[in-house]
Each structure stands twice: as structure tokens, then as C-alpha cells.
Image 1 (cartoon, rainbow, N blue to C red):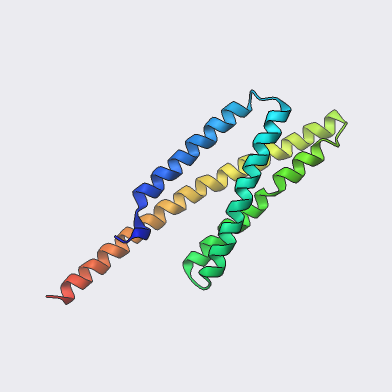
Image 2: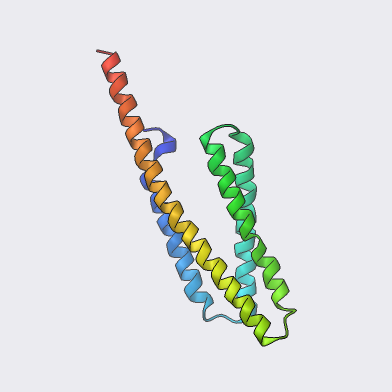
Length: 147
């Protein structure tokens, strides 16, 4: 396997990110509005950096399957950048009914993001299994050619 195919380490990293996200969500449930705003600002800055990195990957990997994934990641990250704007907009709402409707939309967006993450994990599993199979097949062919 090459350095790019250390899948176990990448999956461990992903699992750690999920654990960190879970802890952040649990902690956020008990925070003040100001603490939540600070947490959102930090998460937004991380997301902005992720978008920048993904766009750079797209430009570096144009035409390859990696570029397609990088573009998908950039598109998904850009969609999430609406969070800060929505938070700022919420402060203008005075009507409880409007605020409740806005909360419903925010919860639906969160559920959609979790659905996408679930799909991404399943798709990543399939891609990793395919990569492992492809590498094993290539190694078998190479070994047969050297005999």
C-alpha cells in the first residue's frame, strides 16, 4: 500500500472527529448564547479553512476522481457556510412563531447534514474496499508478470 492508502489511520481520524463533534454538540446544549456564538465562530473558521483546502485540492487534481471528491467536499462545505449568516439573521427575529419556524429549518438542515455524513461514510467504505481490491488485483498481476 502507498502512503495515500493508509485507510485504517484515516478511519481512526474520522472516528475521532465524530467523537469530537458529539462532545461539542453535547457541551453546546448547556452553553449560553454567547458561548454558542463563540463555538459557531470557531466551527465556521474551521469550515472556511476546509473549503479553502478543498478548492485547492480541486485545482491541483483537475480531471481525476480525486478532483470530483474534492469538488463534492467543497460544495458541501460551502453550503454549510450559510450557518453564520443564518445565526446573524436570527437575531433580527422578534416574533416567536418566526423564530420557531427558523429553528425547524435549522433542525432540518442539521438532519440533512447528518444524512449526508451517513451516506459519505457508506460511500467511503465502498471506495476503500474497492481500492483494497484494486491494489490486491494489481499486485497479483504484477507478481504473475514477474514469473
